[in-house]
Amino acid sequence: MKIVRFLSVLLFVVVLFSTSCVQPKKSKPTITVSVLPQKYFADQIVGNKMDVMCMIPAGSNPESYDPSPNQLIKLNKSLAYMAVGNLGFELAWLNKLKQNHPELKLVDTSDSISLIIVDEHSDTKNPAMIDHNHIGPDPHTWSSPKSSRILATNIYKAVIDIDAKNKKYYTANFTKLLAEIDSTDSQITRKLKMVKNRSFLIYHPALTYLAHDYGLDQYSVEFNGKEPTPQHLKSLINVAQKEKIKVIFVQKEFDVKNAAILAKETGCRVVQIDPLNYKWAKGLTDIVDALVE
Image 1 (cartoon, one colour):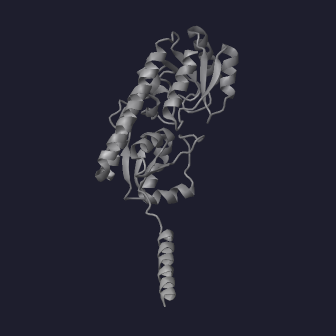
Image 2 (cartoon, helix red, strand yellow):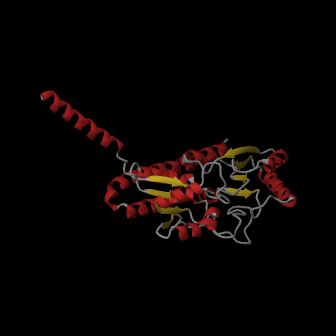
Image 3 (spheres, one colour):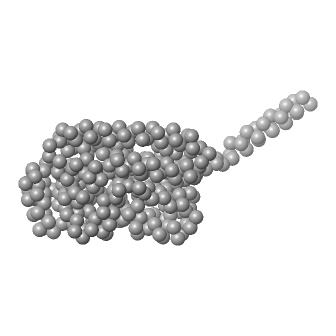
């Protein structure tokens, strides 16, 4: 009798344990961002409290990227979309995403940033002939620590609005992130003090805010979102020779053919950069180090 009772109790414990093991885990809230630097900032702030989905994967062009069907399905789970604001991908897709997901909270993470405006009179010199296949505000606000500080603050405020009960946790994480951003700002300022030649060529003008905030001159190879004309290439060669420019930056998402032509004619080094690097600080300091060399 005791054996039967013991076996019954044992069976009950085994069944209870097995049932508890197969219970589905409670999913975390999800927020969505456009580019990997945003995801880095959001990840640092939300920690283990939320999942962060990034719409534009590494190696993709944020001006022309089309989301996959799987991404659109996953977006159903997202509580908020934290847009860069004025990015080519967002201009093409954000209204559609909002129509399909009317409850989705939209956040402009470039809000309160002093945007650099491009019009038909913009020059190739900083603030650059900024092409994003449209005329208007330059969207690359994450390319400078000074504007990134505001961008991260906007993400933090949106997260608090979504999940106020964990504000203390998010605030502690946000404070650490701000310290990292300020440290990156100091590093860039210190390194650029050693740079006499403050001009550079770049295939796609993704460093407008970095150039603006740290006294650099950016010359874009792209012209109005298109391949450069022979006349434009000739003018860039003249500028590079006159200003003794030493480097031409190319993002890994873009063709290096025209950059190679310029490099041959001017003696510039072609340096591949990744301003969309998830490791935001490294992406920027690598760029500055190339200018220092």
